[in-house]
Length: 127
Image (tube, rainbow, N blue to C red; front, side, top):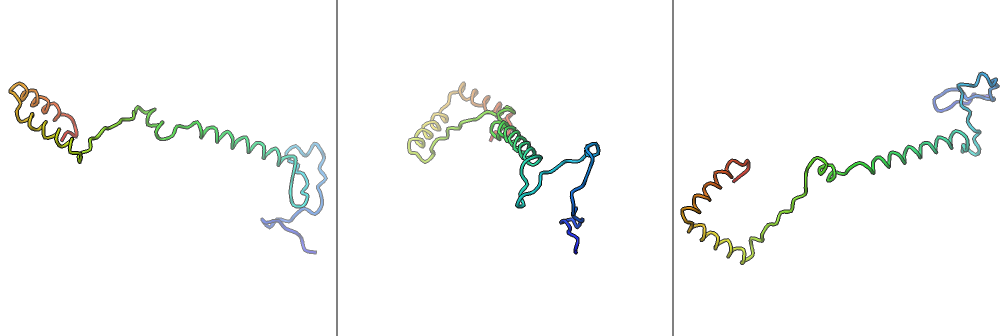
């Protein structure tokens, strides 16, 4: 008769082991398999603990900030930029009017504009 082996190639026990209760302190008893399914005992406890750990992991992940909240926690704030429609004829008319007024600045207004331009030039990325 051929000896039965498990997937690792080790021989399977052919009969239950008789172990005295005092000697079984380091062994875990497993319930007997019925129709290839093991139920009850250690497996149910393991499954319950695994579900608990997965629930805790899910709770931790749900409490982690997403990329927007993470950026906000680092000090970033949302900014809304209102950009004009440069194709609009009203916009072009206002721009032409402002250019005409800029060309007709008084000496005092010219000095204020020049001072502003000097201060703005100190800002990185200006122009």
